[in-house]
Structures are given as C-alpha cells and as structure tokens.
Amino acid sequence: MAVIYKNGTIITMAGNPTAEALIEKDGQIVLVGSLKQAEAWQKEHSEEKMEERDLAGHTLLPGFIDSHSHISSYSATINLVHLDDVVSIAQLQEKIRIFIQQRQVPEGTWVIGFGYDHNFMQEKRHPSRQELDAVSTSHPIMISHASGHMGVVNTAGLEAMNITEETADPEGGRIGREANSRQPDGYLEETAFTMSARVMGAPDPQQILRQMEQAQDVYLSYGITTVQDGITKSAEWKMLSTMAKQRRFKVDVVSYVDMKDHLFLLTENPDYAHGYQNHLRIGGVKIFLDGSPQGRTAWMSEPYLGEDPQYCGYPVYTDAQVEAFVGEAMQNGWQLLAHCNGDAAAQQYIDAISKQSQKGGGPDDWRPVMIHAQLVRRDQLKAMAPLKLTASFFTAHSWYWGDIHLRNFGRTRAENISPARWALEEGVNFTFHQDTPVILPDMLETLQCACQRITRNGVLLNQDQCLSVEQALKAITINAAWQYHEEDRKGSLEVGKLADLVILDRSPLTCPADQLKTIRVLETIKEGATVYRHP
View 1: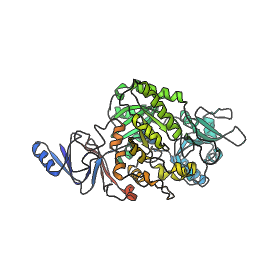
View 2 (view 1 turned 60 degrees about the horizontal axis):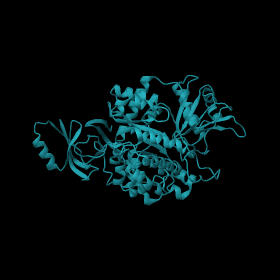
View 3 (view 1 turned 120 degrees about the horizontal axis):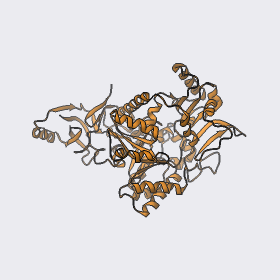
View 4 (view 1 turned 180 degrees about the horizontal axis):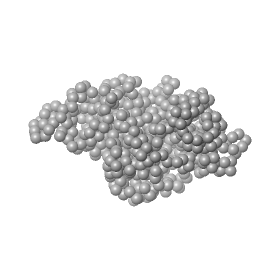
C-alpha cells in the first residue's frame, strides 16, 4: 500500500525546499512534488491501494537524527533518583531520602542519583560524603553530576569501592580529599568516577530491556528516528544486541564502541559493523580527550578564571597516544568520535588527524567527528574543513551553562561557545546534539538555542553566531545523516530515501525563534510506520 501526505507544509531539506505532496510505499519515499505530480503517480499506479494522510495544515519533515547521545546510559537513568531540579544540598538529601523510603530500598543496596549540578545549587559546591551519610549510612549512595564526568559517594560507597586514603588518583582522574588530609571526601572526578560502575550489581536483565524500550520511546516522542550510543562497552553491547535480536528496536541505533578497552566488540561483531541488523549497527569507535567545561575539567589552552591562575584543565592522553588511536582507526576504516570540549583537546585531535592523514593509507572518506567542540576556535575550524572533520555541537550549552561559561572563561571565550556560524562559514559539516542523558533529546529546544544564543540569566552570547532556522534544521537532518555516512538514505525528503518522517503542529520556518521549543511533535514515522503519536 502507498500513502500520500498532503494539505500541509512539507519541508524537504533538499534542493526544492518545500513540496505539496509526498508518497511513501514499502517504507521508502517514491514521490516528492506537486499535487499534480502526485495525482499522475496515482494514475500510473492505479493498481496500488492508496491511503491519504491529510496533514491538516501541519508540517512534515525528515525524521530528526541524533548525532551524539548515550541511549544505553539514558535507559539506565530511568529508575534513578532524578536530581536535575535540586537547588540546595538539603533538597538533594530529601529527594534521595524519599526515594529510599518509597522504593523500600533494602539495606546494602546501591542508591543512585543523577543530574545534580552544583553550579545551580545555593551552596555552589558538590555535596560531601558526610552530607550523603546524613541520608543513609546503611546504603551505599552515589550521585552523578549532570555532565556525567564527576559525582559524589557516601562513606559506605567509598568502602564498597575500596577507596581509602592510601588509594592513589587514577590516570586521568582525581579523588577529592578532605582539607589537610588524604582522607577521601566523597568527590570523584573523571576516571575516578567512571570506575564506580564496576562495583555495582547489575539490575534484572528483563528490567534492563524494558528500560531501553522506555528510553527509545522518549527519543521517538521528540521526533528522532536515528539514535546514537556514544560509548558502548560490554554491558551496553549485551543490552543493545539483545534488543536487536529480539526485534525490539523501533529506532535505528548507531553504536560507537569504547576504543580504549572494548575494541574487541567491533572485531567480534562484523555483521553489525557492516550494516544495520534489526535497526542496530556499529558505526565506529569513541575516545575521550578531556572533560567538562562547566565542571572545569575540559582541557584549555588558556587558564580558567578564578582559583589557580595557571589551571587549564587536563588531557586524558598524551599526544603520542592520541596519534596511535587515530592511526589505528584510520587504517582500519573505523569512524572515530573524540570527545573534545576545550580548545587544547580540539588541537590535539586536529594535529593527530593531520599527521596521520599525511602518512596516507586510510579511507578517502573517513569523516571523523569532534564531539561537543564547545570552545573550538575559528582557526581550528579552518583546519578542520580539509580533514572532513565534523563538529558536533552541544549547542544548548548556551542556555543551560552559558552563565557558568562566562564565569569560567570570561566574556571573549564564552561568547563563542558552540560556534556554528563559524563552522558554516569555514565549510565544516556541523551537527547538534543533547548528549542525553545530560539533557533530554529535545531537538526543537536545541533549534531555539542555536537561533537565540541566550543564557538562563538573559545574557545574549555573540549574536553573530546565531543561525537561521533553516540552517539549524540542517544540523539535525541532512548534516547529521552525512556525519553517519547515511546521506543517501536519510536526512531529507527525496525519492529513494527511507520514509523516516516527523509531523509537527507548526512549521519551524514561520515560528518566532523564541517559541521554537513550544512546537509539538504530533507523530513520528519510521520507514512508513507510525512509532509515536502525541496523546
């Protein structure tokens, strides 16, 4: 059966920006054009059963493409204590206390909270282990910062992780210490924090899969039809591959395996590396080169403001190590995603790619990606263009942490976070993401951030970096499809491409910029099948 969509605004993101009608058949687009052309197609295919979808003045676009997030991590947060709205340590303590009481969490069982941000709390600091002990000493408690790069555990948590005053800081991380002492204060940063997952018991396998289904439904509710798992390790792969084998995915999921410790996942699963298997494929590999700008661990070429006047954050790897990662990925044709927030980390990545490219031997169309690129400079974007290095911007930082960046970096540097306009002018492919679970995968909110560049406190950040709505839409459609090497089948409404579609209640092209995030997703369609409908 074929389906014709008409009587609405159809935004193609292709050569002809709008159309009057679109026809889908067997999950693919077979016509995009005028009503007359659609009528002619119907006559030519009179044997086809035809369903008419009246858009009723609503807007049809290609399905949105998530260029960087962590769907497996997001699924794991579904049943956690959500701390994204806490504004004081007392409120944080109360939310965890209520969670333990309502869920009747057994003693000795880990209690995990996610999403607090000390920058928005009255105390302007992380809680201490003693403050978490005040909630419970019989439960190990761990709370994760919104960035995912740091967190705090209570005394029982430290004991479970076997962290004592004799424990050395791990490479690429830091254990917080009490004043004038080596006694851990509960704060864990970067690798010291990410190691915490190793001591926590795994939840019920069926519950894991149910949470993954809930997570993908959230993405679909935001109009997203292709999702990323931005750092896949063994546990995540087990979950993702089980979902695929059981045919429980509605979205396409592109996995990027942890290159440092889990590269074997790529070589052990060649079918997934060569293409989608029941909506799951391995897109390449991922490395981290630095930390978080709002957490002051991103690696900068110039110091942060305040505190130590020489402090610039820090790298994860040496230049030689990064060059080795890049060289191995390039030689094997594995697309490489590198987390780079600070400009020093960005430069390390650019230099490594440039050096390895000069050696030759890699694929002609490798398309590496710089994830976040928060503080990348214009001269660096100029260098990225000939390397076909995509800048995937977490552009909603302007709203969520713009005021923090002003405090951490000063006006000149903070003005130009997520410099999408520079990328556009320098010919660099750019995409937008939300780094979910850091924030929800709300593409329309991100559009508004890209077009307004305003902080929570109402500060306008370099308005010359603002994009038009059409330019911003490309970052979550056709540009993102190019990032994934999928521009021949996704990202625009053209004949031969998948019928991955989203229906909005209004056109973003005519909506005032300050109202873009109020646009509702009415329906999400994956390969011709409705997978989400607004209640």
